[in-house]
Image 1 (spheres, rainbow, N blue to C red):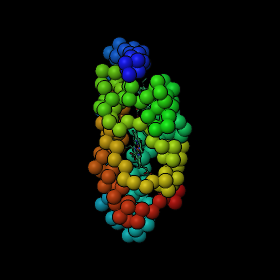
Image 2 (image 1 turned 120 degrees about the horizontal axis):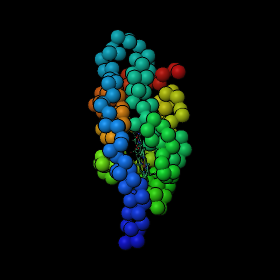
Image 3 (image 1 turned 90 degrees about the vertical axis):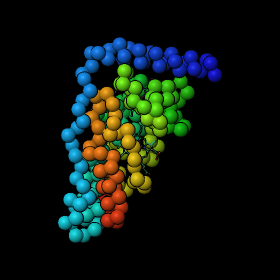
Image 4 (image 1 turned 120 degrees about the vertical axis):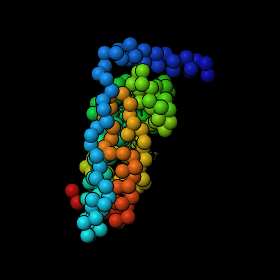
Length: 189
Ligand code: HEC
Ligand code: HEC
């Protein structure tokens, strides 16, 4: 128990201390991305429900294909960061998506963002399952893979200098619901 805690601390110190030391040199936090999402009502003029659902899904795709989401839904077993660079250090998914023994996600990622070192955090932080690897897939392929309502609030308050996902979590939820209500059709391309 104690040995594990110490080992974790060592990894933490090795990564976090140099990061915090360099923190002053980093640019100031970025303002929220000005990008907005269109509301479900903006699609009301599309009479055909299938065409309407497809158009709504393309709008929702602005979020689904944003780096704040794709970094946890990577193509492979290693998360990505920033605008899609390989995660440093080279952590792996492990059996439960929480990493392998000495490199557990929770060693570094806490329940909330840790601003002094700009480490993002959320209580549910772990890698999305391989079946949800969207990074190199088209929106049409992602659409076909989607089963539930995605509500990952962190992506709209990512901390540090990360650009938040477009719109708000509520706007995105409304789009996904409207898409489902219109029949959940996928875009043709
Ligand atoms: C910190 C990592 C992480 C981030 C960031 C993240 N996801 Fe996920 N996502 C997961 C995990 C883990 C699962 C599977 C477990 C679950 O459903 O909670 C998942 C599941 C999903 C699912 C369910 C897919 C299905 O087929 O059931 C959707 C949809 C989804 N995420 C969308 C998003 C969107 C949209 C964003 C950005 C706004 C996002 N995710 C950001 C980790 C993440
Ligand atoms: C040794 C510490 C450490 C471990 C272990 C670790 N991470 Fe990270 N992770 C970081 C740091 C630090 C950052 C921030 C990098 C930056 O933005 O400059 C980060 C960033 C990320 C991001 C990018 C978020 C974004 O969109 O900007 C994702 C996704 C991520 N980690 C997922 C994971 C997952 C999943 C695991 C476990 C499999 C994990 N990390 C394990 C330190 C760690």
